[in-house]
Image (cartoon, rainbow, N blue to C red; front, side, top):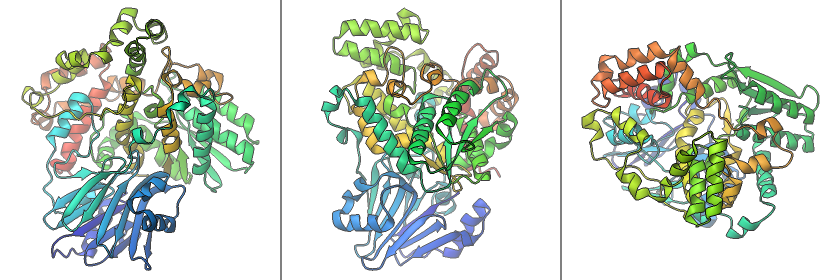
Length: 601
């Protein structure tokens, strides 16, 4: 699981390489031989043998990275650095955590990709800087005092915010997305190298009648780069517009190239028809088979079992290293476990689409309406409010009021929403009243919808954990075509009407000619994202959940309002409220404490 651990020494500390390798090997149950080592008097790097690295003796530069870079070799990266210095990350396309050590200058750079798909953690000690792809190696170094970061827990419980450059561990930080760490002797600085607002396509595109065509072309390019020469192409298909778009474009590429590669389609399915996406999946598969040769498509239906979740919950939290607020990680834990067993080297997923074209939350529909009002386009505002009411099945009065909220932020700060009041009620009174600062998304755009979608982009690194911090992530490479920076920059330049419009999300995907099957193109619901959590916490996981919230350790955290949590769980089980996300937070916070703070075996 652990990909990289590094030490930049600022003292006479001389760590035992064998001991470090042994600790990490025992932690993942594998042999020492699975690791490579680079060491000199200043640095020590220990990294998995599957990780790419290069030492260039002519320039005395050492480079190691994990993830996938689609347009540059290791030699190219070093040459770009020698030519343009720290402008070189702008030349890279992909997801990566990258360590570059310029030995002659004694200069270390630690670079995280644009959208934070892969991670780099660090901790500063009296003996030097600790670096890692995961948190656990830093903990196991024995150089830090492991303590909870209550400010992070507070933001997580109160605002559902898990992003930022701090972690749930008090003395461990992570490099922010699109940033790099510059390290020289005892000077450590985090510097931003990428920001979406500085890279957007020029405004002229807003009037471009071929915007849909441009979007499809860039998606075509993104997927083509991410489909390697492997004989097997792995594709995750949920039945939603995002993954269906990826699968359909990949099929169009194959139809053009005629490589005759096997297309392995992985779908999460459920016996309960009210939870299953089968009809939508079938529509996409039928379309796929019509484009490909006979027997070129291999269908894998994977059935996550709630019994497995109860059994693996503890282990999932251990691998994720920090709490999470949905049970989605279990779904993808099951998916990657299965794909590793069938020996498919990589999977293309639709993850990230909502963070560039909207639809992540219901708020996007109302924010889209509010933007018309901000520009005094009153006719469009009333049309939008009415359409949202109809298409999202919301009372017209509620649609109108919610469309006003984004325009009166000063009132929202003074008056707590019902959702905020509810979250506060679950927190211990002494904890909820602490004066911790809310982590805010930087305000980069005047356009209300674009700014709201930006909030989803900032939350994506937390979402990507379910793929990159997974027990099986070393065996299967997860690839995200929607996170190609050229596509992201184009998407953020598009008008609102191609993102969220008239109560319909992901408009540009639905309007792209000849891509989505009609059944998927016209759907409005989001099935797997919420119903499964509701169902499982009301039934199969109810006892498991009750046992945890009634435990002595849960009650003694001084984080939870036990009475309110207990009452809320009862309401959820009875079907009177949907509190699945809150329940997930309570469980994962408690299990995280037991694993990392209490050090339960």
